[in-house]
Amino acid sequence: MEIDRTVQLVRTGYPWGAQMRKGRAAVAARVLGRKAAVVGGPEGVRRFYDPRLRRRGAFPLPIKLVLFGPGTVHGLDDAEHHLRKALFLGVITPETVAELGERAAKEWASATGRWAGRDRVVLFDEAVQVLAASVIPWAGIPIGAEELPRRARQLATVLDGFASPGPAYFRAVLGRRQVGKWAAQLVRRTRAGEIQPPPGSALEAAAAARDTKGKLLPLRTAATALLNVVRPTVAVAWFVAFAGVALHEHPQWRERIAGGDVAALDAFAQEVRRLYPFVPVLAARARRAQDVLGVRVPRGGLVVLDVHGTTHDPAHWPDPDRFAPERFLDGPVDADALVPQGGGDVATGHRCPGEGVTLTMIAVAARALAGLAGPIPAQDLGYDLSRIPTRPRSGVVLTGSDG
Image (cartoon, rainbow, N blue to C red; front, side, top):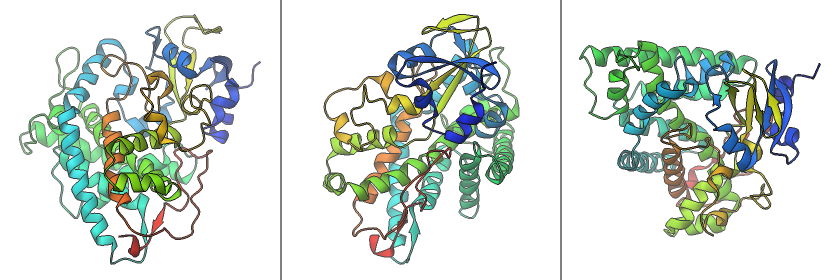
């Protein structure tokens, strides 16, 4: 019997898919006890988002319920998926993303102003707080200054431990329960008229959301929808920490951004998202037995997309482990080769509708950080590719003189 590669994936982390594929578009494997095809590259991405595959039942429950929550859009298909996706597309528009960016710019200005009086600042921790302070009110959620830091930490705890066996995972489970209960109360109070969030806000949309039969979503499912707007924005803290590393190691880009070069800023944000990892793989299941780029997958079998290997594929990204934002200044790139947040069509498929939020939040943070003075102190800026999600070991320490 073929060896199951699940333990190898957990131990290896991000490089697992590329090590399995060895440059091929698809290879046969056994994952989570099922026959599977591991796919990657643009051809693999296009096949992964083929309608012959479905998302229901693809994610392992211990990860799905902690990271995404019950009834999440990530596990829906067909009409259910289209209806739920419309909720997010209605909330996340170019106009609302711009508003979120303005909120974040003000929060970063306030935060960096406070740093001047401190001897030591951990960028990752600061980013968690800034992003939460930006997105929670933007989502229409009423929250006091004393509650905000606690909710920010809980959301970060969920993200930090959802794929880490051991104590971090159990902390993530506790964090999920805490924020899940909080979000459910917000939805319940909105439906009861105790809270009146702004029209079009995430809280208003989640509380009013209905299923394909026209019934209000169950309380926990609506709470999940709300958190699936807030949580991914807080997750940008991982990218912000890496942006801090990139600004330190590539001062020429820091200078361009500080000088107001908008094209350089946009390219910088894209390259941070491409180079530095968050998601290693994604999974789907075969609706029926089928050929997947030469690999026979039975009904219910898995198709695993090598996200990290695709965004580091030397066939499409020369010298892929080098930080080079100029890749995005030379014309459009293949969207199927750039899938740090998934691929496919954003309106009808499973590509993340929050890509614009992520890029905006990275860019706003990078602009704020680029304006700081002085080098950062000596520290370990390396990161462990076997840990999911990974981030710089030091968290990126700044000093008061950086503010």
